[in-house]
Image (tube, rainbow, N blue to C red; front, side, top):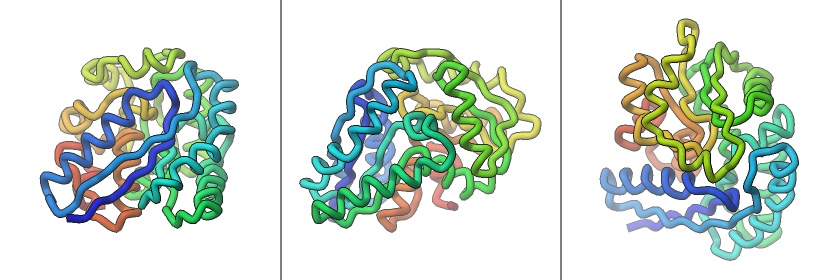
Length: 250
């Protein structure tokens, strides 16, 4: 059996990334019992999804990376999509490089992924040039996400903001409600649906169901992060019932 150690940098108020990512990789363990996934988290303070708190959280990334380096992870994922996208187009490259540099200073060669970069990579893997997006954010932050995607060459054909500013409240949203929310979007020109552009908004229980109902690929920030983590580990990107991106084809 091979143990794969995964380091996570998450907001202090996170409830979801530390449940959905392990849940996906536990399901993958059942497909291949030769792989076991072990998780190590470092937290950065953030309670409300505001530009000020997001900037303050980003400033804690290097400290969090140093803590994770001590566990000698095989990959590190920084998991707050909007904290990165709110800083302007392309910032995921800056954030990933900064964390990677700190890990190297501490003697850890682990590759670094971000949920923001992973979402772009996931859309590219699917060949999705046009997407519809659901976020829990206030509308100005959703516009930031749309601008970020469009700067990367992905057209956002429609977007829905649920306008929940408290991050704990976001983590307590019922994922089943997404089965109604997505129907409010115009998907006529979409190549894919991002059913949760936030690692804190729960969506995993309905990703496959919505994909089956909508008839186009459905992904989330969390499923995209799982795809990128598996890719960086050199493992098959297969997780059952988690949407096309994790079907093993990409």
